[in-house]
Length: 103
Image 1 (cartoon, one colour):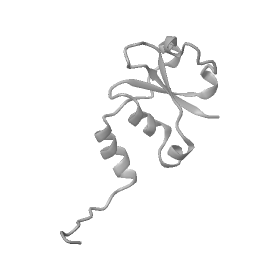
Image 2: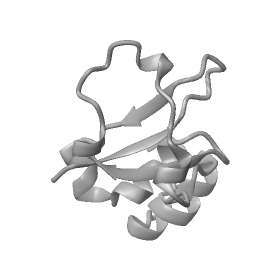
Image 3: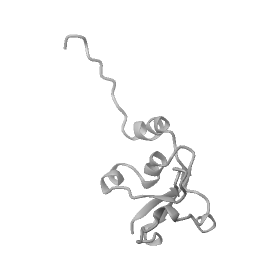
C-alpha cells in the first residue's frame, strides 16, 4: 500500500497539496524525511495511505483537510538548509575536496 504526503496548500488559494514520493526517492529517504524537505517550512504535514485520497482531482483547490480525522501532524516542514544538515549530510556524509590552482 502506497503512502502520500498531505498538507494545506500554502499558495493562499486554499485547497490541499498531495505529495507522491517517487520510488527512487524512497530508496534513499523515508517518506517522513521527504515530507520534511518538500513541505513549506513550519507547515504541518500528514502521511496517509493512498486509498484515503480521492482519485477524482476535479476542483483539487477546493479540497479541505479534515484535521480532526487526521489527528496530530506527522511533522512540520523544515528549512532546506536545515534539512541538508540534519538529514542528508547524516545519511550521505560528504568529503571535502580541495582543488589546487592550476589542476
